[in-house]
Length: 75
Image (tube, rainbow, N blue to C red; front, side, top):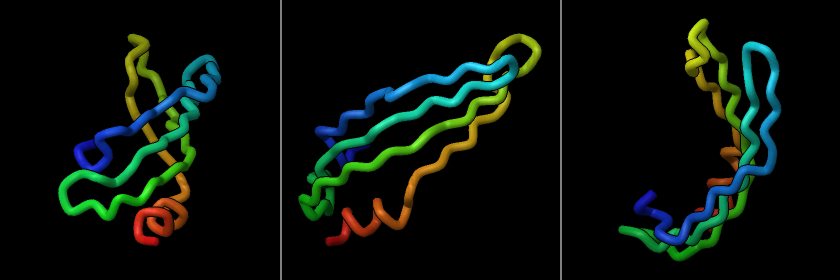
């Protein structure tokens, strides 16, 4: 987070199912932190949350286009 002091993470949608949820998000920020190159990045991803019997998150699996992120970061 220190690499992107102006970062904005927004929730695009939340899909609920009985034992899981999918949290879709968008990230926008400028890499101006320590050793940053000043490049702006903008990408989307999601987290898939699996709940336990008490309704707490048992596991979280995230996904985003890492190649696109790296391309934007290093251009």
